[in-house]
Image (cartoon, rainbow, N blue to C red; front, side, top):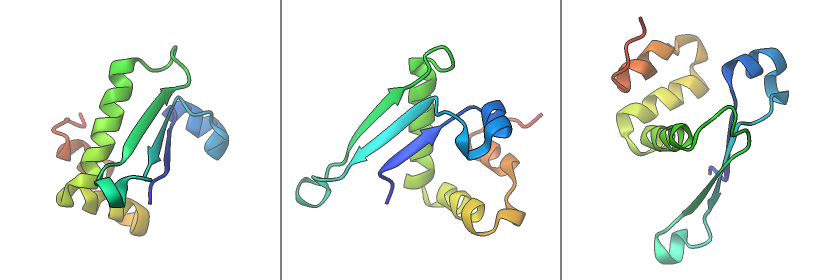
Length: 100
């Protein structure tokens, strides 16, 4: 269900909305998912001045952790289905990051 993910900066998103340029793109190649049980993943940093390799790796690993962990996935569902009840602090807490 996730062939592509686009990451951009918060300030760019605030200024340009859905027209904000992606800093990092991720593509999933699912051709071998059924026959081999493997999904190939490619990540491309579009703006190296905005995002380092290690930051992009962290973004990808963290994103995957929300789709591969039932407790964290509930936050994804809440964000998509119950936006009014979504609290970003819950995301930070699930990652062990203090909001303060």
